[in-house]
Image (cartoon, rainbow, N blue to C red; front, side, top):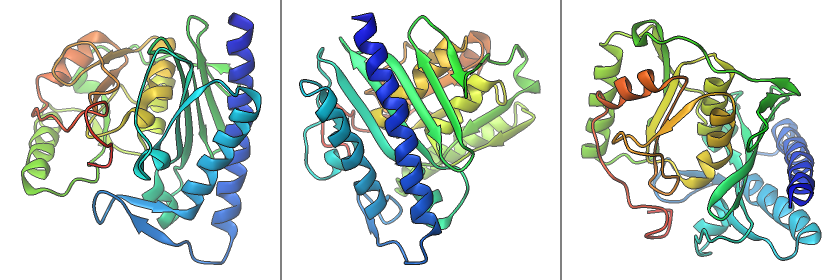
Length: 283
């Protein structure tokens, strides 16, 4: 099976790179993108998201016809979100759609590959930076072929933390997000950052640029690839409640060290979005 999965990973890298070319071409195109909404007025999707996902899935189906798929735009269009033991491609065609719409320069194609509900490889292509992040279970994490290693910082007061605000603008949810933000910032930490894409935030943890990333409200396609990249770079994954990370829970803490992750968990105001495996993901 090892050779088969390597072939799949090589195809994922190729598909992500081609998808990145489509994204860059769309940004160069003077014609205005048609911007639509999904779960809220700030949960955006464009025709480029849909085009890229179709291109990736079509190319994979031609090469691996028996494999399954979880794609952000397919699920939003009504496809079931089912993660089984079968080989499954977990695809976010444009992670950072809001960035894409506003030409904010952090946009990623994210492809995770799961077998027996365990991510076997992850590919995140930062399109405008031309950075290809890859990881294969047990074989390390890389950026453009160079090994990645998380930061060795163990003092949260000397750390940079990444997070995002998500697309839920319900007042109670927003209040909890800002309670967590205030607590973390007041520890104090050196700073709080956000690239506008979960996949790139996780790759920044893997690269040692930031010590941790946390978010509540993300989906499995946002973090499947990045989770393996972080762990293969020596990092730690937890749920925001301090338990083991569960990619379907829509909650994640990715950190360089367990001591940082566990300290961060103490400051996060808990809430639980509807799980990805419990209801349509656009809720």
